[in-house]
Length: 109
Length: 123
Image 1 (cartoon, rainbow over the protein chains, first blue to last red):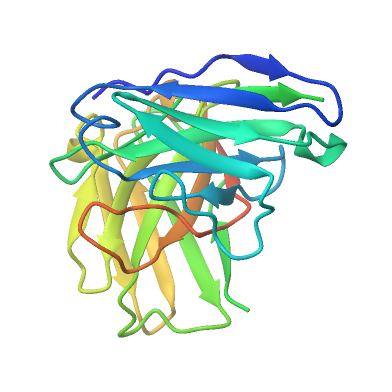
Image 2 (image 1 turned 180 degrees about the horizontal axis):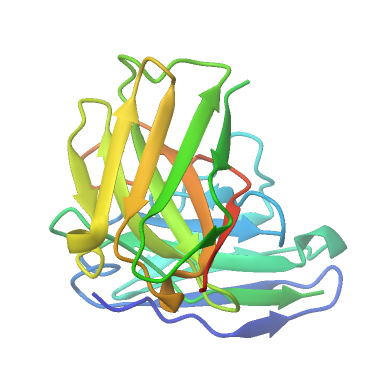
């Protein structure tokens, strides 16, 4: 069970859009539509931003969207704001009753 | 509003047992159809799933940790516990507990998290 691959960092200017990739395999990301994304401001509790590839929980801004193609999932943040600066992690069901996270991406605005 | 709070010793000696408790307030874990999970984050590293427990007591663990992990529920105290033994310096991390809403099998996402507690393994 290997961690999902995310870029270490992504940056953008206020108002721009950025996309964070999350690459796995046919055993995890590609095999199930159970990819979720979390926002983590250091020292605080992580926050669920997207689940089931593209579903936004109630209360999450519609500036956040998720998608998947093959063994790779993506989180797009549009209209980037200063408050979006945080670490972002993807996660996927990996079969056999296991879960795997990505290594995390630091977003800088 | 439901809240999760992790607690336990901040320092554990190598080869000993790490024991943490997650106290749920604002709601009861008894009879709820939720899973409860433990996740950790070593310093300067990403998140790592440790394991989940269903309200029935059935547990699921990361294969890399399975032989050392015990997760249990204490419904009388509204708590979820984690034991990891024996520990090494590699187990130094912030440990989080989190809730998994009842959905389809494998649809394990964490919709509510605690703020985490730092555990350092050192002699």
